[in-house]
Length: 183
Image 1 (cartoon, rainbow, N blue to C red):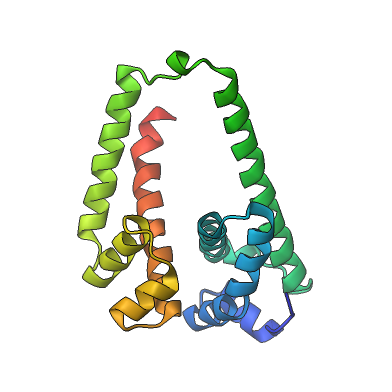
Image 2: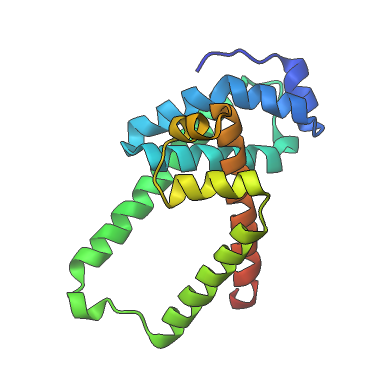
């Protein structure tokens, strides 16, 4: 990851400037995704982790230390996100492998929560702006890549990435609110 963003842009990002965030996103998104892909070996997982990383960067923008190199900061966050993802995946797979098939069945309460959560996600998707909804469904339900979606909808790949990021943010927020009573 090259250091292509100057301190003025980072300061603007810290204050909530959307143009500065867009500039940082455009400068680092592909390199960050490629870096994470090196760990996950999955295009979809790398894309989702990268989108999460940039959403969290925006949310925590005020904690960016402009006296340190932003590239190193972003590199560290990306590495930690990839390692956490792989650790979680390994633990999940190990746990599943140790259980007999009949042991790993959901209880009726878990099934009910899963159904409610599915309905909530469907509701969030239905309320999305038309273009965002279409992009999200093409990505998640049809399995199209961002490039394929951009071509099909006659838009830019960057727009597709941005809309997917916003869609995932909306869904995460709804899921978080859904689980608050369980915490």
